[in-house]
Image (cartoon, rainbow, N blue to C red; front, side, top):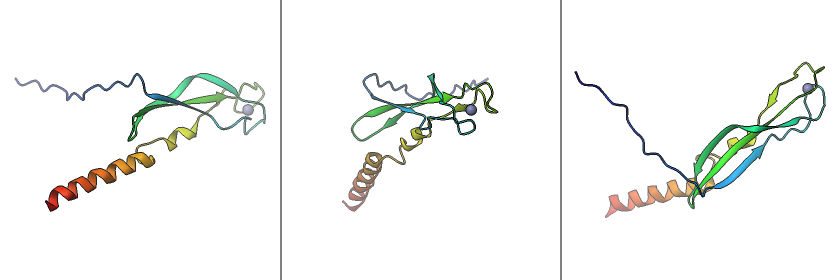
Length: 109
Ligand SMILES: [Zn+2]
């Protein structure tokens, strides 16, 4: 019997990657107007490749701690992390353009 092994992607580590920690942009709860409290853990993290190097991006959320609020304990996430992506990254778009140019040059020659 043939046992199919899972495909393995090479593990990539970037210990020296620049760290970008994005905080939730809200300061007050939208339901009770009380000041939100920072939550220490990241709600998400990712590594984005740029033309110079990889950058480490993490989002930090906030929480409503007002017990009388209808949304007590609700977490507010850092949506700013979404602007750090390969498709939104100007450097990455430049890298993709360079790859296309080199492919076209190879096809011409
Ligand atoms: Zn609240």
